[in-house]
Image (cartoon, rainbow, N blue to C red; front, top):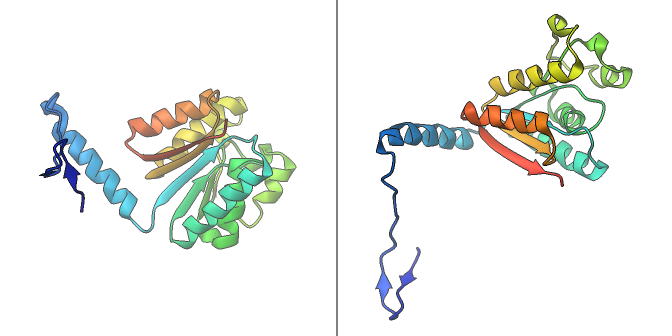
Length: 187
């Protein structure tokens, strides 16, 4: 129970101020908030985890533990390939907890991945490849891949720095798609 006292020491009832600007958009906002709240309360979610490749080992360990815990709670993790950093840590965490709850969407094909990424993907039961993007630069294919990952989730967790244009673009895309978003800035 919240108790509010005025300047003279008397109790006041708590109040909520609701802005009346843009009343035409209120129903959409309420619907969006209701959908976000429902997503947050779901026990089994489709959570996208993407982020920087340049992470200290301690951050990678935290992402691995977070991912394993989310999978243990019943969530499906959606990420991309990566030999180091966020995606690699997410893959390790999900594989330790329940490989069937992991979906890896590659920007191109397994054959185009470095050998260490190919090795990490051994045993992953759900990998989506894109041979149609084989001629794209990795940067362009990664941007398209991030959008595909976000389209497939209802919640995004992103680990990035303030200077990461590609990941900021991905977060903005998730906002436009009304996803529940958690952003961890690393700098």
